[in-house]
Length: 271
Image (cartoon, rainbow, N blue to C red; front, side, top):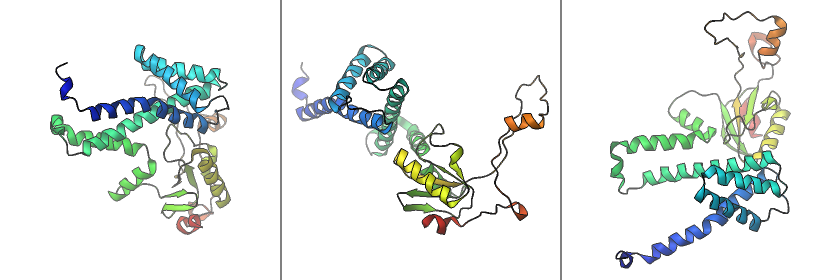
C-alpha cells in the first residue's frame, strides 16, 4: 500500500482502457477473418463475436490457451459455421497475433531505450525479428536479396492494376500471393503460359486474398523422386510408374530448347 501514492494514475487509466478495449478489438479482428473465409452469417454479429471472444479469454485464464481457442471454434460452429472454417479462423487469428508480437518486438528493439540488458545480443535479436518479418512477405524478401546482389528469379508485383515492381519476364510464370505460406494460393493453375490466363489468375487471387500478387519467373525442372532408405536399393521405375511418381511441367518448345511463347514482362504486364 505504501507504493500507491507513487503511482501515476494517468498510466493506470491508460492501462485500464487498453484492457477494456482488448476484447472488442480481438473480436473485430476475428470477425474479419471469419468474413474473409466466407463463413460469417447473420447470427455472427459483432456483439456475438465479442461475447464469444470474452468467453474464450475466460477459459484462457484458467486453462491452457488452446482450450480457449477450442471453445471459440466450438461456439462458432454452434452458430452455423462448419468445423473446418471455425478451426481455420481461430488458427489464422492466432497467427496474426503472433505476427503482431514479432512486429512490436522489432519496433521496440529499434527504440533508444534502456535495452542494455540484452548485452551484446541486441543485434542478433534485431536480425532474428527482422528475418521473421521478411519471411512473411515474399516480395519484400526478394527486393532485399536483389539489393544485396543475390540472384533470384525475375518477378513483378501487381495490385489492382498498379505495378510496384517489374522485371524482364518470360512465359511460363507462376502467380501467387506473396504474404501467404503453406502453399496457400498455389495450385495447378498457378503456372500460366498465356497472357489471358495470367490476367485471369491475377484477378482471381486479388479477389480471394485482397493483397498484391507476385508474378515470378517459373523455372522448369523435373522433380526426381529418389529412395532415402539406406538399406534398400531403389529400383528403376517403368514408364507407367514414372508417369505417376514424377512431375514435370513443360510447355510447347521450339528451336534451341526455348519456349515458343516468350514475352517481355515489363511491357506486357504493365499493359
